[in-house]
Length: 245
Image (cartoon, rainbow, N blue to C red):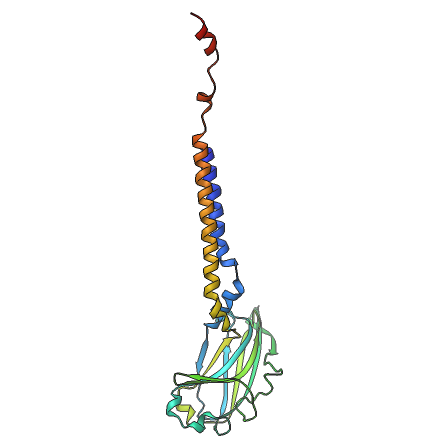
């Protein structure tokens, strides 16, 4: 009986480990899928000049890495075509981004670091992304148009502050539900393959689980079929008693 319990315990531990290991096969791809579907947005007023600040606290969005910032416009099909082309649109902005870290003090949380986080590289060559010379992403579909604005580095334990200065307002786009959005740098090709990878993983784990269950079953059956000591060995003095008489 004790051996049966040991066999069941070992099998349960192995099956539990296989279930736990399901999340360890490709965690980075799973993280990318989760990040790609998570977007934050903030409605803005672009019908008047001024400065717009968007603070994203560290505890509000756990993503770290490169962040894409964009302007989204709705009802594009109802707008004049010229309003959506950089060569002729009225809206002109300047982008900036920074990060702030804090530490506790007697007076409350104290700011200890403020650093620039705006990305400037071969792709993000300007902080005026809606100027005609800017070469940055644009996308659209279903009546919605997205204008890329900038890239921002986001690190752990930091609040991200995105700043947009409206140099020239746009009353036409201002009536099309304009909003800022942020999302992580995400390879959308991952979505095309993640389903197949999950299927292969689950099939392998199911096969391994089945093998463990079968081995445990046969181990218990083998033990139950073994003759006990009482029946396999004759009792002392049995032979001598049978010859007497």
